Length: 197
Image 1: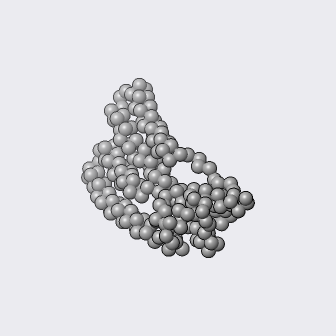
Image 2 (image 1 turned 60 degrees about the vertical axis):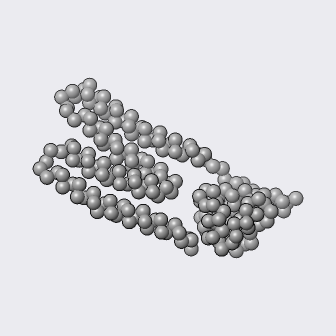
Image 3 (image 1 turned 30 degrees about the vertical axis):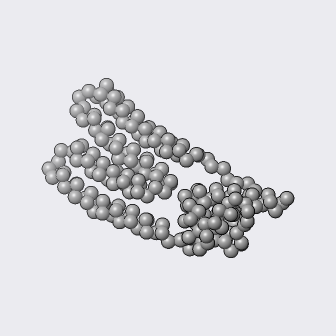
């Protein structure tokens, strides 16, 4: 009976950590040089990996071997879809702040002509909030696009805010930043292909 409980615990934990790492059974099998059928068998509790594989898995997932064999499976704090809703709520707060600035400036400082800039500044600010969530969720393509939106949004905000000669030259700063962002994305994409050591 104890052996069956241990197999069930290991199966639950292996499934939990693999899905948390956003790996398919086939991707994990390739990283371990095993078949996806073995991974499936372990996750169904029909067998357990040997200690060498458990050590590899613990390194891959950044946990201890004890985490993999423990009868206390970690609980998910947020369901998958809730993470997106939380990030959108956080971004919505930025837009609420922009609306409040626009309204309050319109009421208390009606002579101010560029109150609409609150919405322009809200674009990079909300992109920063979304970027933080997407980096946590390891969505690299979306993070790359958000990083681009941040620096182009800041450049546009500065361009629209200040009436200075040659302010349009700020847009030249965006070119190397865009190239660096694309290179960063390509580097992360290539590093994902290599297993962690």
